[in-house]
Image (tube, rainbow, N blue to C red; front, side, top):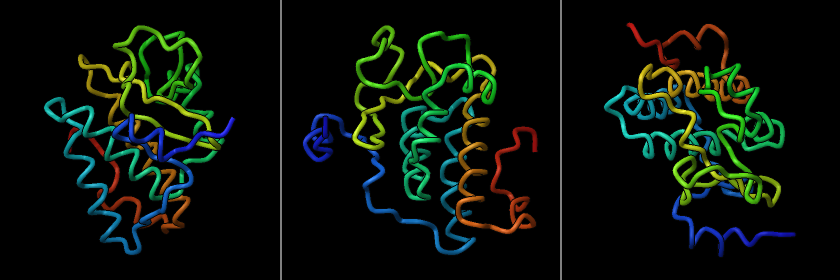
Length: 167
């Protein structure tokens, strides 16, 4: 079944798709500016929906909406291991439409990722308010994937792109 992303996105205000144009950061300064903008939303006072939108836009812009990355983010066990994800047997950070979605409060109905014509809703259950660690772990995972994809030299990775909570 093919999904008309344009029609779908009218009903869901925030959609990123593997077919969207990419606005990949071209310089290290552009990359740092994107990362700094996302990092503002990581602390507990940051807005989770804004964080999700900024991070998944960056994810798309860096060409990271791939079957492998989406499959990883759709897997509960992988997410628990990588991001200290709360115990949740239903799914990972992304939830495929039609599978057991859990209660309505466990995913953003109006925020989705489309990969290979499949819709994945973005879970809002992975973030742990008590420890505030999951956003930082997820952000760092995405940035590390972007650094590899954009072929940023290792010595530049330490220049403040990753989120280190106690600095």
